[in-house]
Image (cartoon, rainbow, N blue to C red):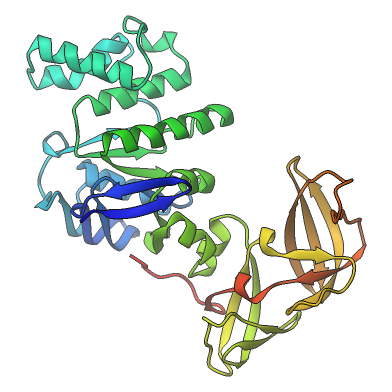
Length: 380
């Protein structure tokens, strides 16, 4: 029985097996612990992303899976086999790097065929596989070009084809789109998603770009300071962050300190709030409430809704598709995002600088992320 994920309108089918398992993996460089006891499972056929800021340990983790570095503690298993002591060229993985790592003196087809030639594969099989890989990444007709004759997007396609031509069980991608301009990144990430779904190969994708991870991933591991703070489906990690770091890093979030008065009622600097039925707190418990800027509603007249208070519009940032309102209420600063709709549309409101507005935070949009002041742990 295959597991099924639903992402947008696409049904994703995954195998039952575990492609990569990390068990208590640690890596130190001197006094710095780059990876601090990470345990993860990546399923067969999954598009899995390691997301986090620079220095969080995500690339170190990828390098250990690839075999370029060995863990100081813990185990890495690929297809059930312990990889300790197994060199990179004997692992059933290939890596696509951020800087392409193409041989400048070789043509496109020579770059793609390099790994196959090192394995002493017959010429006919090499030619067949190279043709297949070129078609896969839409590079037909450019076989004879050198890397210096290619655009950034074309170089990344060649690097991808060179990795895929070896038919790895797991493809590791280390921020492969970060050097490209925004429009090309957006185009290539859709191509990568479609390619991964078509091939059914397990992808482990490293990125610091939150939108990239949300768009492409079946599941995301959010990393911070060498640890995994949360693992889950893209929608779950965004909608239900477990820690303040995840709430802040994965998109924008407003964090409001609160003290529980009853299991579903809290006191905040903005007044008393009612929480969703799924939340159950202990009276006196100190928590942080998270709410995304697009989940907050603004009104000119007081609405008949729970968790309503007044705030002043302190600043307005126009981004084209959205207005970002920066609000101030009783010393608390909040960000609210609204879509820029046609100003003649009935019910559409735009607010002005220093205008006092009514703010509503419905209970189901408020998420208890953490005890106030606590940090994130290893959520693997």
